[in-house]
Length: 89
Picture 1 (tube, rainbow, N blue to C red):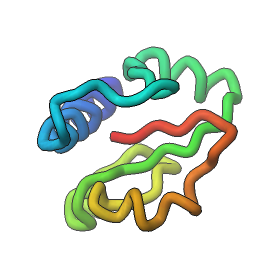
Picture 2: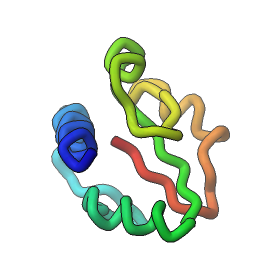
Picture 3: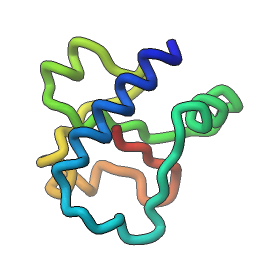
């Protein structure tokens, strides 16, 4: 399970690597797989969003994650929580 999380997060990081080199604007933060798992196991609600193409999402994704390809994040931003924990991978 940890290997799957690590693989998915690594794939997300690679995909996001195509984004501009500047760091994200605050309040964006990075979270490790271990930290995310601890939060989810403790009952913290999170909007987990898989930004890969549909084929990759349908092949394997984090349970409970939903698919919003990276190019669709901005146009679909109204669907993303503005108040809770949001994790993109």
